[in-house]
Image 1 (cartoon, one colour):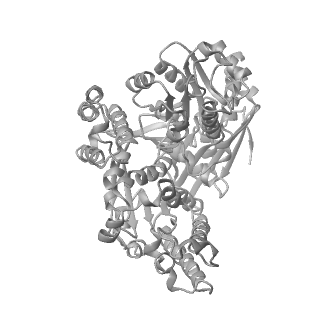
Image 2 (cartoon, rainbow, N blue to C red):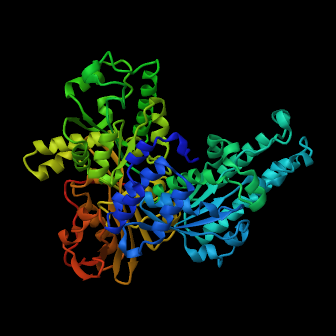
Image 3 (cartoon, one colour):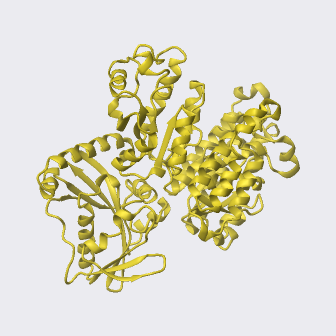
Amino acid sequence: MTEPSNMSVAPSKEADKPDRRAVVRSSLECGAVQAAIQAARLILQEQPSLMNFRFLRQLVDGLKPDENDLKPYKVALVSTFSIEFIHDSLIAFGFINGLRIDIYQPGFGLINQEMLDPKSGLYAFAPDVTILAIEGEDWLPEIYTDFMDAETSDGRLGMVVARFRRQIDSLVRAFRSTSTTPLLVHNLALPRVRRAGMADLRLPNSQAKLVADLNRVLGEVLAEIVGVHIVDYAALVNHFGAQHWYDARMRLYAKAPIANGMLGNLSQEYMKYFRALEGLTKKCLVVDLDNTLWGGVVGEDGVDGIQLGPNYPGSAFVEFQRLILDLYRRGVILAVASKNNPADVDAVFLNHPFMMIRKEHFAEMEIHWNPKSDSLKRIAKRLNIGLDHMVFVDDNPAECEQVRRELPMVTVIHLPGQPELYVETLCAEGLFDTLALSDEDRRRGQLYQQRAQAETMLSASSNIEDYYRDLAMTLSIAPIDQASLARAAQLTQKTNQFNLTTIRYSEAELAGRMADPGWLAITVGVRDRFGDNGIVGVMMARAAEDRLDIDTFLLSCRVIGRTVESAMLAFLCDAAQERGLNKLCGRVVPTGKNVPVRDLFAKHGFSKQSEDESGTTSWELDLACSPVRRPSWFRTSG
């Protein structure tokens, strides 16, 4: 995080570098927010300095709310130590992730006052996410700083761990009783100084053992409370090293222990959670082949000549492939965009003994000599995902720049010259990180293969209804429960195209609706002849007077075009009539991405009641005259 010395940069190279700050300014002035974000990303990749954080924050502060495409996002920072110096980097990294961050920061050490008082400034702020930032020596001095004052062989230090369990449990439960906001809690880093020196590990109640016990207790307590997530602060400190992470002078002078140069890394860690909570996690990784999945150019070096195997540099490419395969197993869609001869590529996948990834792992492959931006557009269209959910990885700076210029909404990662740094480069921002891994995530590669098989069958069908019947679809409709809660929340956070209102919900908010008899909170699953697609839809509705009002209605893009939405509406019609209600009502809130769902009500016989200045429309269906009927090609279960 330190700035490079001017002495190490040749003047001619510096002169050739584009003025990225000017690009950010000019792009924002002409309303090209995505282009500004791309340029800002490069600024922070090349020089994540305090000066650049401040520059981007000032630009964001100067934007008018109605003149940018950034999503407002309110962050509350409650801490045991002074953390206000993080504001610049948090706002800067929020900007490159499409968020306009507004921060609530009470004084440090006011955790109890803020979290236990329902009338505190924290709850009045109504944050989108709350962060509880803890340093162990602030909360638990007996273990961190006063350790040698205690007798380590008796049970008094164990009592400190038990007290911590009670305190954190009471604090977080009080927070959850007042707020459904997602809560992020730091775990505890090891002490900066081992008070017993090298003898610590031989003590029956060593500092290392006690901190491990505290983190275990923290995990156990928070696992029982919906919508609370652990920030692995200990791993972050360990990764960068405590000597670099902490600033000894500022810790003593201003109770600000984290070095200024490390605050950007903490901001990036927080950003992983913000993206997951706001549906901004990337869905698809598009990779180049030559000098990306293997070293060398297969068209010139041949299958036997490329670098891939147990010896360096081939071992670095094997390691990179292993990471990509792990992403596939986590539910990331894989695709290829390569300028190459298809026959040469096929030969590598078929014949090279050290290929970790196989062709079947890729949902789409674009292998030809056309611009890679065109390849990305075709991949996005066939997968039915937005370009902003794609990450493009290439070793060639010219190809990266071409994609950035033509498709500024795509996240582009230029791989460094050393292949041993590929894994770290792809993992650095956690672009594919999610809060949980569902069965659907683990099976996503298989699900896209099933989707491709279904589309192949469609092209061979004589008419659309025969296709629907041949799919042999079974619909599973069930209330959201503890088993499906995480997946339901994930769908509200990630689904953009077929989503009537695009309201994001935390697990805590959904849990509240599960427990409220006034709400219908439903998951929808689809199974067809090719396999189980898992949970693909969510509906939420509430009775009001003589009508059932639809709050949430969404469907995964994997099953769009199969009339699942008709069956879902039919279920809501039946549910309303069972409750003696006469009308089914809903609204469409237009976004830049939900064009596919905007005609849902019109296509199913609803009448439009109103439209406001933002384009939001309200609709109503008279159930006595024209309820929606479930298509006959669906079977139901559950």
